[in-house]
Figure 1 (tube, rainbow, N blue to C red):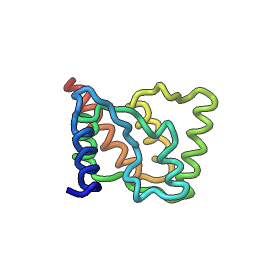
Figure 2 (cartoon, one colour):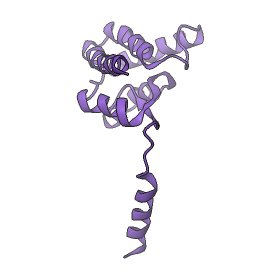
Figure 3 (tube, rainbow, N blue to C red):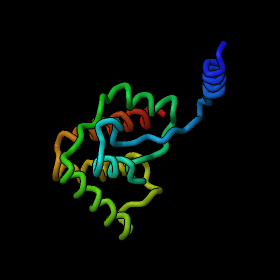
Figure 4 (cartoon, rainbow, N blue to C red):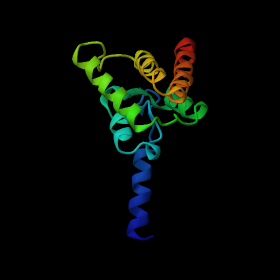
Length: 134
């Protein structure tokens, strides 16, 4: 076996041990490949990334919600600016749970981009179903 294959297989063994209580960073605005420039800045803004249970909720969201439609760059710039203002004046914080974050994003995007808001609503529905069953 070549060194490269051995290195790859060793790396796979290390990462395959999964804890049922493991958390993962979930980008509320996904998939990465669709979000470039100002869109990527919004996607990676701290409020749009939340830790959630990896093997349960994270898997369900990606299984049942295909992708979040990307907004126009001008709309993304406005939403990002509004998030920064809300953060600065205490309207939102990094301690907010995933439901509140989704509700804030939905309310902001409903003013600019309804398809993006609808995708976030589907994601919120999955989160609420998950929280209701646990």
